[in-house]
Amino acid sequence: MPTEADELDLINDIYKPGWLDDEREVEAIMESQPFPVFGDTPAGSDPIQLPDSVLGWKLHEKVTGKPWPSGSQGNVGSCVSWGTRNGVTLTMLAQIVAGSSEEFADIAQEPIYALSRVEIGKRRLGRNDGSIGAWAAEAVKSFGVLKRAVYGNIDLTKYSEARCKEWGWSGLPDELEPIAKERPIKAYSKVTTVDECQRALAQGYGVNVCSNQGFRLSRDSDGFCAPRGTWAHSMAIIGYQLGKRPGFFILNSWGADAYSGPMGLGDGPGGGFWAEADVVERMLKRGDSYCYSSLNGFPAQRPNFYF
Image 1 (cartoon, one colour):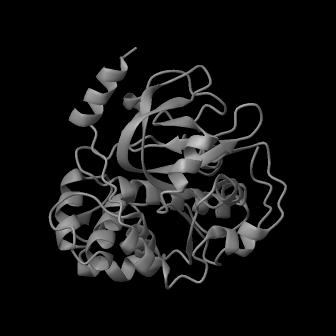
Image 2 (spheres, one colour):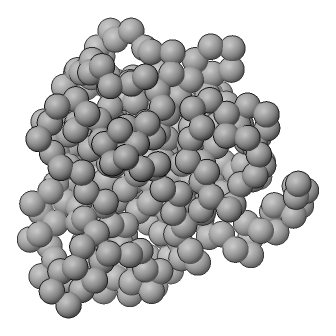
């Protein structure tokens, strides 16, 4: 098992966080949202009886017949697009399992990265990597998402670091914008507490968490990673558990090989880990974490899709 020093070297040398902490930019984006905080939405204020656990990756298995994949962002700071993509994916899966006519689509990260940085962020980051959670949330609402497919001479079937770099400066090609706008997210809302996060997940709304909290890369016997150091990073929260050790399942974008140790409750994707609820509370308090709605906003839902 690698030592803590070894893990820090790995993070510095191989993995590349890419979240930018900018409260002013977040505030500017959120001013125009009808429900800036999830607790103010119909779903956030609904007195739902929380299930003991939510294992969002099980929805992926149910819909596609395959495990939720543990992809890697590679050597580019595109984590915000990955966290946003995975949060939106959970929302989409929950819709499908609850009976929506929505078809499953493998959402591409590169368009989210491009749209967040250029169309929303107006190239204010220059050629440096990274993005802001609120920019990505606004991107998928205003411009929509693209599934992995071939579009004319643009092959989006596989994730590309080079394309992230290129589009992160040039923006999404004009011919793809009308296609993306066919699949917009209706709304997004800030998640600021553990209670809001649990309520969002229990009703099928995926969450992207952006924070400076770092973690060990080795899981303990329950699948939990201990908090260590700082990462300016974005990840998705796709599950939670109550009981004697309350926590949340966080899906990272550094691939399954980044972690070692048992998976814990639900045998989640290898690229993720469980984190203590109080640690996640601190992460959410950074103020740049979001859940994503279906095409109908944030109605209170009690779908029987978790098991």
